[in-house]
Image (tube, rainbow, N blue to C red):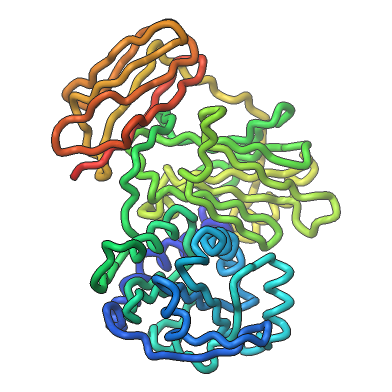
Length: 426
């Protein structure tokens, strides 16, 4: 099951993410002035780069097309940034779609609820200047008119996009900075972890099926989800780099891609994703879900994939898909989920941005009536053996050479578990 559409799209995504910035840097435009341009947007208004810079600290230019799926998925996070920073940052989206007329672009803008102006790239030549053929692309022009940042590929996270924009704001920005990558996230964070990665459907009446086929190295994990919405849960390992972990949901030629860290729900202490299940009226009744590290090969056993179907009768569609890839003699069986051994303590693994352990970190485990201090050992592991319950964990101290957000805290679940705590090495 390593050659499904979702996994192949994930491979393309990974290559785009890692080769994109290199291609932009090779164009030699970072740190140089972007030629001034004027375009007419889809509302008939004029946008001029130099005019926008007169009353804004930076300009974000997005290159896109109406037919571009990753562009469509990126627009909500760009729109959110516009709502936050429109008084300080000007935005313009320029289409390179051959058939994207201003009328069609305006229909698209209204249909997708996009607040910032959109037009065509006919007169700016920005995409041609980049020297790449892929979209979407995003440039940030600083207050001095110079290109400070180029992203060749979609932002997957609003947090990443916001860090890129904020790097060019404020009174301390007094000379052009050329960023070759998105600024790192230096915030303190704690996430639940497990002994192994997992990707499961957590619906109440879900059934778990394993499908085998000749020539298939690994069996296909199928979840029969009878509900309209699949409730998916993910677990990561303590040494996973959350900046590189992505999740993809692919159904009926539509793909949604998320950074796993953005799926964390602190109220339930888990990474969750709710996905619409295929309906009986859909052409395909198969939904494919993938969780993987972008640095992994798509054949790596830790690149997890599961298949969702709304009814057992649609297993035939999964079999047909396998046969199309050359796997025959399919057979399947229902299985019960494997219950992992539960921990007998609360465990924190403290690491820096490179995944290296950070020793001698002190935290408090607090109830409504008392707090107990716990310290990390030489491996950066903090163990607390208090009775099971919801604890308010307070970060007290990190060693010299490290930084953490003042007053950082989080809550445990009412059962024992493991977390990874990220602090920043200066």
